[in-house]
Length: 205
Image (cartoon, rainbow, N blue to C red; front, side):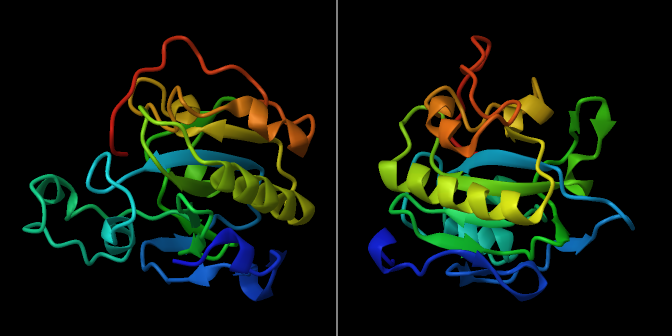
């Protein structure tokens, strides 16, 4: 994997693909509703197998190539059709699966500020990690870079966790995610707040 130092400076490229990100196209996407503006960023955490990092499980899941026989947990999720716009690996490597203008299938049953179907108006960013372990400095640096670029191109109103848009159903990015590290992105509602005390951890998505 590339180290953060070798990744190009991020900028928004053609058709919503970030220059400086490794592009691996996922078929698990479609068109946003006509006229829908991107106004929300949803931060997720994922590890496949649960609690293990560095393998190709996440990429295989998002590209519908996960082998159900490769790990007992994979048999439970291999049939899922999910994706995210971006994945940030533990070393800060950035992978993009879906163009920002497209709708990625990341939030599922969800709502934010009274609006349902968050996939319609959000961007999904996955962090390689789990609820029980801290994220890396490289991931926070890359996340800040990504959020800065996205804010320059879309009317982003908030940066929230998957648990915020799907409370009770999802827990990621989990209690180890430090929301204060996002203070550099400015006065985004939800971007600089303590983790809710009700959060509970699970290893995978």
